[in-house]
Length: 157
Length: 158
Image (cartoon, rainbow over all chains, first blue to last red; front, side, top):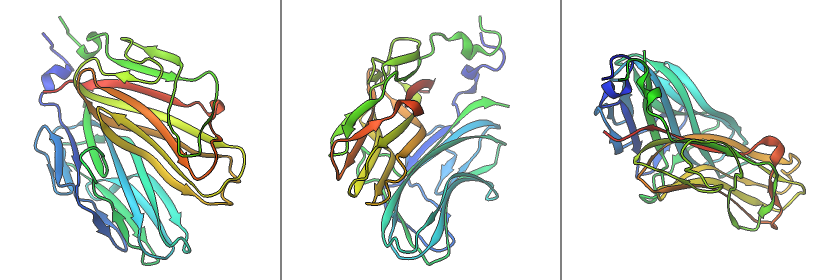
């Protein structure tokens, strides 16, 4: 019998993994990404753009994005995991060259975050200056995980 | 009876980590898809890794991680570089970029680290690949920057 700190007592263990099958356009100043297609969500805590934390604890969170630049202009690109729309755990931050008319970027990152029940977690992409438009490429087939946003409780507090 | 921190009592927990003792030379650059080899096991609790392939012994969610330093000694034409993982038939793209002619003054590129949560069924496999095209087959996986490949089972399925 498990009596203390047993992962066996925490079922269903909070965890989610979501993808999005359609392309998304992100314009100046950025926005939160939507993920319409669930792979799993054991506590039904993910909706639209947002995972609402069901249980306080330490979570492993990550994302994979396939980003196309579709317009000309300089700008600072960043991808982060946002908590309560205030704290950002940056996965990547880079400057785009003004002369780089088109290109692409794969972001694959993860972080460990202490969260409280009812905290909200989102995947944020920022682009400032220069009028860049970003296309977040949707999953082109069921065999590719991008865009992919996931999280898993690894320890209760 | 588990009385405390019982996850530690569930051994053997599936986990492995491996690297290399030598560089892997001239593995891609001409479009060749190269399956990364890691011949030096640091640990492999239940012999689930054979040097290139991780075989999940049971269904569950696995954290798969790695690092891939690619190296090219000479300037080349435009090159498209891709690093990816295939786990249980699903492709996870870790890095994909285009390096232009003249941008090769940095000999190292794409020293990419990654950590991904992957669902795997029992007996399914995971492998780590690199591919570069646009030039000749002269890209190495450089030993001094320590390529790594590993995984551990986080949980089973509810």
